[in-house]
Image (cartoon, rainbow over all chains, first blue to last red; front, side, top):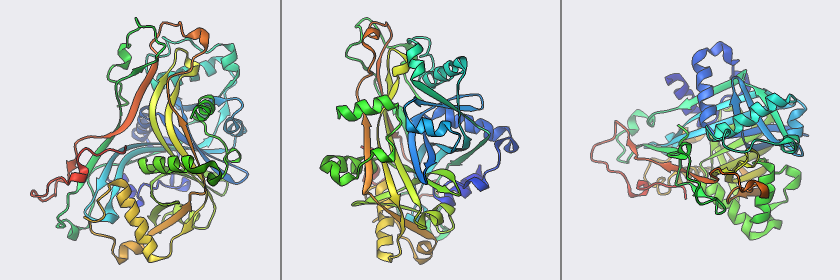
Amino acid sequence: MSSLEHEIDQEKLSLTQRTKIGRMPSRGHYERELVYQILDEGLVCHIGFTVDGQPFVIPTAYGRVGDRLYIHGSTASRMMRSLAQGIEVCVTVTLLDGLVLARTAFHHSMNYHSVVIFGTATKVQDEAQKLEALEAFTEHIVPGRWAQVRQPNHQELQVTSVLELPLHEASAKVRTGPPNDEEQDYSIPVWAGVIPLELTASTPIADSRLQKEIILPSYLHNYTRK
Amino acid sequence: MSSLEHEIDQEKLSLTQRTKIGRMPSRGHYERELVYQILDEGLVCHIGFTVDGQPFVIPTAYGRVGDRLYIHGSTASRMMRSLAQGIEVCVTVTLLDGLVLARTAFHHSMNYHSVVIFGTATKVQDEAQKLEALEAFTEHIVPGRWAQVRQPNHQELQVTSVLELPLHEASAKVRTGPPNDEEQDYSIPVWAGVIPLELTASTPIADSRLQKEIILPSYLHNYTRK
């Protein structure tokens, strides 16, 4: 991890450009598992694409099945229609793990895990695969949820567009650990270290129209992304 | 808020395209304040830009001073060099506020606040303004920190590139509140509501090389972004 860490610390949370990123298979099992782990922990991705020279970065939910990332949206969404044409896309998922407080302004940093994916998306036409994707979205948010809720009907499927993006060209980046100050700065008398950050859930808020006898299901007790 | 909410709920966390976004001044004081509030609470933005037709989405830290967003990076960073050329950029900040669990798979959603900024960045050449930006980065992470740490020296300033992006073309989007199920689905006997999410700090981890007599400063007690 130390070489990654060093690289990222220098880049100040700026990830590598595409040309520096190899195809995942050559990086071996460890990075593939790390990519999957980050994608499975995250809830929102940022989708980058270009229309008429203008870049857009849109936050959206997603799901993963094997080595495919699924995204979805309204069939009327311009993003979905643009991506379905097979234009180049970049999808980034960032998990912020902590603030790195150094003795010097320059060495302040953040700890994080992130994934950057490049590729082109394809519209899912097959209805069974579309349902698999929709199940993945729901299960990604709350495992156990899909079996309990009403599944999409014909009309809902009609107005929902699903795209798949292969995870072939994906890269994970990680910064962990304490600040890296210059040797001569360690004597500066200021607190230094890490403030750990985590996306945490607080007490669920029942819908005001919820039937009174319905209790919170066990899969929502102590909800966490870890 | 209800019209924004409705629009977003339909878009399933896909924000509007540029052509739908007006310039902020015409939207009045309320939206400007909301944009500032979201930017000030967030810690990481996702920067989108295009090089040779390839979109990139890079997570990075930022700071805000008035109606300018500052980003920084190594002078060797390709992102910084590309953006400094004045190419179109899209910067998105997303705060995830909760999971919206509906009675139907289709109406599952997320509560969030987000900002999308379009424009072109300019390299900050003036040394005083560059220091103002670097102070903004540090104070953005932890207010009160800048005065306590060693400030950037000449060499650190030389290897740091700072870009400013005006907040003229910025838009805020918000989804809040409970799930919106179809009327006939409210009788489905499944728990529905919202799981609130928040980025929270846990106990600070002191650097192992910290001098033992240095205690945690008061500005790090109960650290929160709210």
